[in-house]
Image (cartoon, rainbow, N blue to C red; front, side):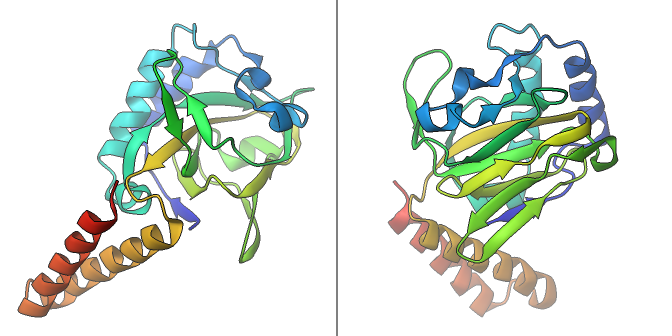
Length: 226
């Protein structure tokens, strides 16, 4: 499932994140790339030692934790601490690749299985040319370039790239999520059911069939979660 969620960061959070990143010292983005991805990755990344990274991660995770659409789509069990990258100048692209299935925690404490990937845009689309996130899936090829503060969620198994940035600077946050529901088909069914229940409650209220369907949703969630 590929889902775009607008305004995950509010105006104040976006301004705080942009201010923190304005003074960042960037390093080679290949520090978190797997063997195959490293051959096509040419961007910059905020290092783990950066003084801003703790505050930035708190901003992003706080916003995600209050967003019901993100929860419904990803059903997160674990979120690898978010990373931040930059595309500009000579370090301006990331060719087609697939995200590694297992990602080590930055502190070396263990691994997170990457079921779902997400990109949170932190630059406005008119601030740079190029820089589209291009995702290939079973329904075709999708080019995505969202307003700052918005996020796109997609399967980590997707082949994807970031096209060259030819003007300006593209700054974003990216992250990997281990879902409570490993199977993407089951995860999509639960999301569709949840969204339908939201519409039914709005139009009908908490009538008996809606209550019963809500119970079915939660019973499926209990059955399918790890």
